[in-house]
Image 1 (cartoon, rainbow, N blue to C red):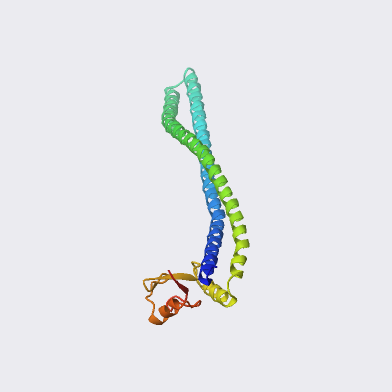
Image 2 (spheres, helix red, strand yellow):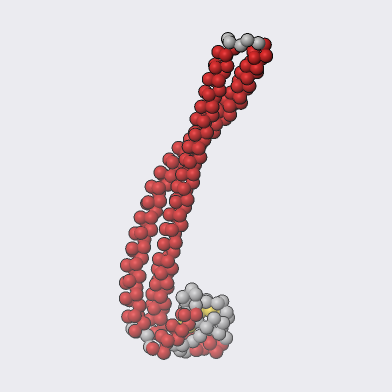
Length: 234
């Protein structure tokens, strides 16, 4: 027949299992949310990049249109040269044509920079689209894995929570009450710890002779003076 300490150890193992399962189950939605938020942010960044590409393409088309307009102005001015009557009119028209040509030169230089910028932006967008497509596959796989893990853990938790009252029912009420009182005060859910080489393995305190005597005599309720946990001899 199992001793009280053995039953307490079984109960503590059950409590630790329940604690770890609940802790992990609380972590999974956070992890899922973090993964989704990360992918959402990257998708939004790609959208911003696409908008920037479109904006630069519009600017390029406007620049090219402005160049075409100036070229038409040059042709018009050159036709008017055939009809000038005075040197003054001729000089004014040639000066105007030179001005148009200078503007076209500046705009063509700007257009070349824009074309390079658009080409680089498109390349970056294409690379990001491929990367996100690959990442989406990895994300879906990870989310499925987390969902399977969560379902399995919920089933394990349900079984362990059914088992726990059976284990607790096999322990004397006074000892169970002491165990549960200590359990509530311990963040790591360990209310029962072993004694090895006269040292409490819970807080590493060397135990006094009186406490050791109680353990050797087989007392059921022996507490560590350092951490207040229940003790048993390993």
